[in-house]
Amino acid sequence: SSELTQDPAVSVALGQTVRITCQGDSLRSYYASWYLQKPGQAPLLVIYGKNNRPSGIPDRFSGSSSGNTASLTITGAQAEDEADYYCNSRDSSGNHVVFGGGTKLTVL
Amino acid sequence: EVELLESGGGLIQPGGSLRLSCAASGFTFSSYAMSWVRQAPGKGLEWVSAISGSGGSTYYADSVKGRFTISRDNSKNTLYLQLNSLRAEDTAVYYCAKDLGTVTTYYFDDWGQGTLVTVSS
Image (cartoon, rainbow over all chains, first blue to last red):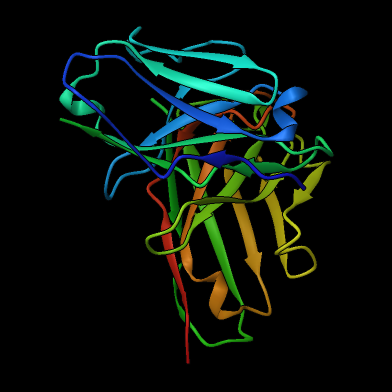
């Protein structure tokens, strides 16, 4: 299986733009999906595939990918976006899933 | 509205067994693959196992292969995870997660609230 690497913590000023990244060899072959998780809650899917948002997810969330790096961008971060963010993708076998270690986003 | 309700967690001694259930409602259960994802206390997410909508294909993380068994009963709209030979490192909140597709896409668009499994003597 492959690994996905995320920065442990990122901060952003209220209303500014932040990018959270996820690196791994499997991302050269597969798109990532992104989840946010607030304390005591289940994860919530925010981006999947090339750049798809589930119903109800604000359009300030967007995804992109280049080489072995997937990125989640929040344009105009809000206080309610403060959460842990996880990426995931298939591993190199295609039949298993790997998650990144998570990025704690602080909105200042 | 999709609802996933896990049950069956609890305190279990090392080497013991447990069966988790996930009761699903609000969607055509048999049309979607399902997964179990766990989260150890204070740690990140770890995918555990997946099953196709028909139940004909199953997949396991290396860390649980040979010890855990995923299954589903589409007539009861219920997903299961049988946990055998439990170890301390299996202690975690176990979430069931609905896949976007009938076969595994590994995009999880709905999650339950989780059930806590604690392995300790």
